[in-house]
Image (cartoon, rainbow, N blue to C red; front, top):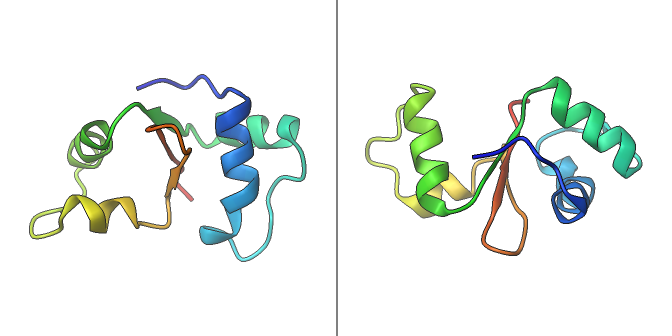
Length: 88
């Protein structure tokens, strides 16, 4: 996992941020990057890394399938096989 937020990650967050927040927290890439750095968001390179992240954070995922976890409001699909995880 990484905390490097490239253009594709920032765009995914800007487009989908309202799945986690009632109103936008960023209006452009610079604001999005600042917000993601502040809340210590991470980019996972695979579904397995997303699952590992939640396990390491102590989130009870027992009984939840990968699809359920990927549909969590704090998980943003980037579109290239990566996922952005944002703790709201």
